[in-house]
Amino acid sequence: MTFQIPFNRPAMAGRELSCVEEALRSGHLAGDGPFTFRCAGLLEKLLGVPRVLLTTSCTHALEMSALLLDIRPGDEVIVPSFTFVSTLNAFVLRGGCPVFADIHESTLNMDENLLEGLVTPRTRAIVPVHYAGVGCEMDVIMTIARRHGLAVVEDNAHGLFAWYRQKALGTFGVLATQSFHETKNIVCGEGGALVLNEERLIERAEIIREKGTNRSRFFRGQVDKYTWVDTGSSYLLSDLLAAFLYAQLEERDAIQRKRRRVWEYYQERLAPWIAEHGVRLPVIPEYCIHPYHLYYMLLPSLERRQALIAHLKANGIQAVFHYLPLHLSDMGRKFGGHERQCPVTEDVSDRLLRLPFFNDITEGEQDHVVSALKEFFEGKQRTHPA
Ligand SMILES: *Cc1c(COP(=O)(O)O)cnc(C)c1O
Image 1 (cartoon, helix red, strand yellow):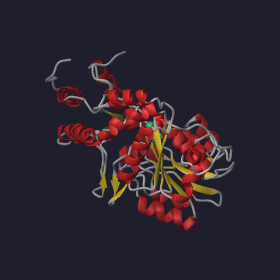
Image 2 (tube, protein in one colour):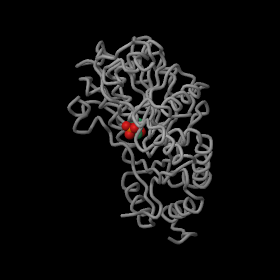
Image 3 (cartoon, helix red, strand yellow):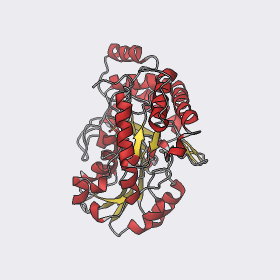
Image 4 (tube, helix red, strand yellow):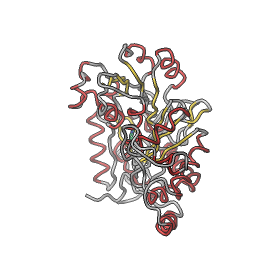
């Protein structure tokens, strides 16, 4: 069915079409063209990191991370159970074993207090996910990682332009991954980036992204022929998509302003009354600056959540739940996930609901969502009929 107010509606932010046209006219459609360098350069400057490599997706940036860290069969990687499959799958492809950590009830981020108990002699990495772009407790996570000699890879798909204690998300781990999928804040359809926070990894990362060849060095004139030097794959983003992405990045301030308005509009209209109905709204610690990626509510029960989804649907509004607990998935069980306790993940997964959230949602559309919520919880008439 089509919804009057969908969950997501991607929109152009500015010069997307003219940038794509410029890329077409330049004749460079493959990866590592002029727009790729403009995007990567801009992201490097904004994040203050030594190197950003655009990739075909965040999933592929995670796969590159697993290759760069030389994850081998039997290596353990600590991940939250409440995340997207790619956070784990990338490591499982190399033979890694996910070890599931439960989350905080407040931020829905990996519970750092559980980490020490999950570390074994086989642990190689910790992969925190900044849910909704609200920073995980990186001070603690980095301290534990250092103590045990573990790599940290931040899955920062939600958290571009977010901060934790005066430091940008994506700059804590040795590696971090970004997504430009159409559901994220900054988009190009399908796309991502690998953020390299250590110089020593740059050359090998370029090789892995270029099918295991030293083609990048060749194009810079650093070697006189290019050849196969390592394992790798094809993880380069087409310059056509990089052109689209560049136009979005140029408008990042306008995009973030719009999303802030959308987020605060929901917050101001729901916070005064909805807690009385046992509903919890997002929790943002005062030391976190979040990127207004999504707006969620925690309902009192699964039954209420399902009833609300149906009620909103009847009003033409598409609201959606989010991650199912990965430790209980078919694949998660193969790694013994079901033997672990992640009660918060299981509970939250049942009760969480995300409201329609996109850059160009109008106040009228949001009013319609809020009225439908009022009607559900308080039996009030809608002010904006469907
Ligand atoms: C969207 C998302 C991904 C995957 O991003 P793609 O660019 O679609 O591969 C990975 N992790 C998290 C937490 C995500 O939200």
